[in-house]
Length: 451
Length: 188
Image 1 (cartoon, rainbow over the protein chains, first blue to last red):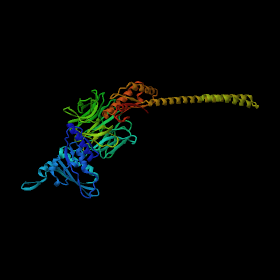
Image 2: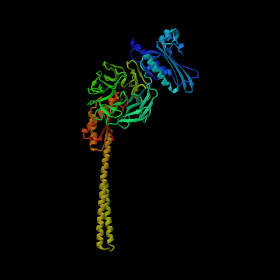
Image 3: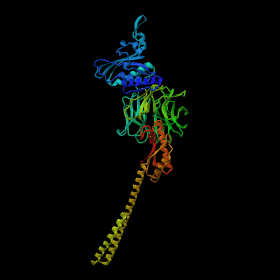
Image 4: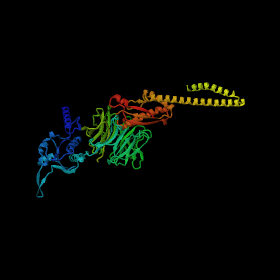
């Protein structure tokens, strides 16, 4: 029965997603759907206004993609109110929606649009009927506490998507108490067809939803491991453009780039420290892959690991005091943690054949990693203190997990129908989505900090 | 071949020259002067013969070198057709067939110390990209160690790992994985 329910539920979501946002593929594979219904009412558009694009569709897709909400489609909405006064709160309460966004767009100039919005609390509205008058200090005042927020902006057509993400951020934070990550970006590598592209390896920065792809670098040799600076201005990455791996740092806005390392052997896995002053990396210049930390101002290196086994994939704790990394020192690769002050190192993962590619959640309480159990590579999380591990994904050959800056969602690379694509999974594992991508193999996603 | 032709030419032309010299004495010229001229002529002839011989020798040497170069190019072409060795999953151990291939390369490289190679290490898609870079390096280095032990100079070899970044076979079949787990000897 439960199974049938979940199948029906996923069918419903597939249809729903095809209908309202053709580019977003959503599938909920199992478990109880705990996403909260929300009404993003199609914005009312003044006569004579020509919309450059839809804001409400982007907001609905954002909120649904967060896994915390699902935006009702038009058929599920009891009405399409233009303003607060038109809202029938009991009807909306019956639809299950806890909140409602209504908006209005009016063109004011050739490329000037006034966007007015109200976020309404359905439950509160149902209680008060949208208007309550009460006596306060002997005065009759109108209480409109069912309005959670309201705004009005004048924006240009090019800003529509950005403002849509900003609206999603506001709604998400109002309703969850947690900062939204819809205005963030992702960096990743696309490997296009070498038959048709002279420089098939491309470093890309796009909006977190895969839109507005921007190619930062094209190469005829592999590019790897993009990693954001904490100010969101720069990317560190590995390029084989000189037929060997070298670490570069590139300014996203000016495009200027600096070679950081060119040692014999591996120059890999660069990761900025939380303060942005240091870069952790892997070098095999002395014969064996070891973790190093470079002070970026002085370029001085400090060796962190020293043994004959493979040590790789350094990742900083949010306080910058520890690194976790993958090591084969115990046989198969597992995740270890090193205290950067004392050098004290201990193994932290024990479940499965191997664990790789560990990274901390932004609050530092959990780690996310690639777990191999019985030959299957999946994204898993583990409590830093509890040590309990939970496998989150069921996709094939998962790798390169990277967390949203609010810790709500993990983006990772996986194989889907023989192609490497990007997927999302919520930190509780309940919500899973695939990102629409352009041609080629898409890999090494890295989620930006808050921008 | 070329040398024989030159010698044959000398055999035919020398008597002719001598006959011509004799004819000139018949025309009442001083006998001593004639003798002197004949001796000078003989010396000149000898020098010419020496020069020819030397030239022939140089040509022979060049020919030998050319033949050797041709043979080396042929050997190289053969080796380059067999420049890939394959590895089992998650290991850098050389299989017996890998050793058989590498020993041929080792012979050639030891005999041609000016020849340099790049040893590339590659992996299949399983595992993380960073781990595979490390594994690919270990594969390339196990090839390097084999060649070092077979008298190839370390100055002839450099190592680069591409991890899982340059697959030759796409897809996720076992055979695609097997084709991608490889070491490649690239002659420079």
